[in-house]
Amino acid sequence: QKEVEQNSGPLSVPEGAIASLNCTYSDRGSQSFFWYRQYSGKSPELIMFIYSNGDKEDGRFTAQLNKASQYVSLLIRDSQPSDSATYLCAGRDDKIIFGKGTRLHILP
Amino acid sequence: KAGVTQTPRYLIKTRGQQVTLSCSPISGHRSVSWYQQTPGQGLQFLFEYFSETQRNKGNFPGRFSGRQFSNSRSEMNVSTLELGDSALYLCASSLEWGADTQYFGPGTRLTVL
Image (cartoon, rainbow over all chains, first blue to last red; front, side, top):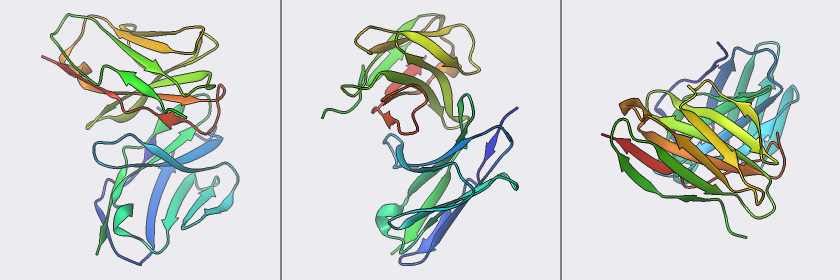
């Protein structure tokens, strides 16, 4: 059974701090990894994707991938209250598998 | 450019009925994927269509089916509804099959009584 595991949270982070979200996956065949943000009552929206080991940065967001450890993370720098949402991690080989998400709460 | 549209937005059905949901992708996008989202199971992949052909399928029973039309619009059908089918059904469109960037529609909230 291919799985993507995330801590459900909630993860509470003070405004301005770094939020660190983690994800592990079971399928070594997964080639691409994704982070989505989903606000309550809204649809998921793609933050970024990564397929090479190492870091990928986009503005305040940095995705990190370690294929040997089957581990993906998302760092959010200078966290803002508007970052409060559920963050979904996903991995894909032939089909995409989502984790159940981590609820992030940024404390003003 | 208009986003992904899904109709209807809300639906209430009873057990044993069938339902058809519709999705219109972003103009120019040719791939449509369907997902089921529930509090217990999270977001689960149903199937992906490209060029009117199902390219991939998740682990759902045969009661769940779909199709795609020549204009890339897609429909999914659930027959013999069960209480457990109550969920948010999301459609996502992307330019091509297997593209990394996909855009989700607002979803159809299905309640089965």
